[in-house]
Image (tube, rainbow, N blue to C red; front, top):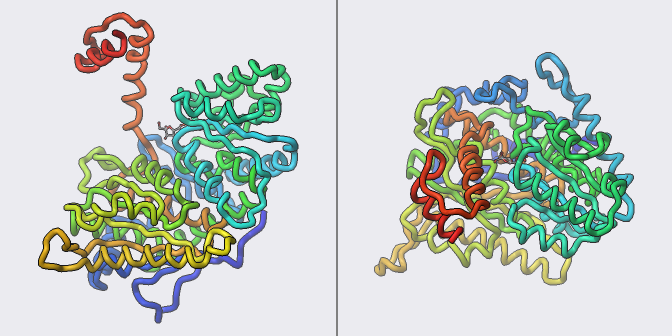
Length: 503
Ligand code: F6P
């Protein structure tokens, strides 16, 4: 594996303004957070009192910080390119991680004549690879195999139908990605794709050749009919939403080459090293988490927005929604006690488009909504217009941050901007696999710090289960078609709704 020594973390010298911080060449400017030096000191004191430093150390050391599931959160091992030992119950996990890297590399070299890849997975088995494939497609001059990469997540057959219209059955490879290998959407979509291969004349042997799985449940993948050497494992110590660094990120390697996948891991690993080693005062994920905590304390904020001024990162807010809200959208702490703060609602989309949508509310709405503005220093195309358009893109971003912070007073309340609306500015030197990895790891680590500050277990998601359970009797009732009345599983309102569909 290559290392990225030239990207080593650095912090600006002491002479740099206090609001400017860098790690892995990613620059964070907190000037518009409107947090005084004394307030920052208090915030770092809170971080110390809540044992954030110990928490970071415990996370990297593989302690069982996921208390409810009694396991560690060791996704950092998946990008540990230095291969330094990571012990889990006394056993180094790195040999198993490296073996998967070697298998991914070998697979990249093997695939010839493949026109289409159907990646089937949902949630954490979808957002990360989908974001990476979309983002890197925008990188000027990136080497790509040019396969059609189809992402199939939704149980709604609209997505399936669109993909099957475009894919060439005889030259399609199917990658079924599911940590549990029990997720209904994924297994049903996988069955539908296998049926499509059969219906299009593929033999048993051709289908076996076409099917791959990425999972922590190898027996279930085998039972589905996937050959053992087509199964890429990951482990229960990797949360689904933190899994893009495992073979879940296979599409990145297959489309852009194993080197690009390595660079993606390298960027994240560099951010991990920064997170692990930098003092709290210089630590980007910690600073960003504390700024959010400050805004919760000051304004009682309930939402925040991530606005990348880069079309390439249009999927980033969707990825971030799962990361933040599935990790920290909880009302009770690690001990089951009510929490004071938890994850705000996260939303966002790429600028400048976003300006023409919900920015009215950001400027003049009743709620204060902090924003992370994310920009890429270099234009994302080589067109003749690229420089000028990029300048305009950046000017818009800078102007929005200024307008939100300073506001504008007029005699007409309708034209008055209240100002004092906080924001961060994050600058990536350019967008490539390395900096994409660094950006995602920055936010993953920020989510972990927020969990530590709020005393929330960021690594389970019990809240997603109830709806899945309730859907089963409802589906049976819809299938049956007969009128239903309320019972232990279906209440009166839902029974009436089922009857609307069945009538
Ligand atoms: O329902 C939520 C969830 O469990 C997410 O946490 C996960 O990313 C997604 O479903 C998919 O799960 P799996 O990878 O096991 O199919």
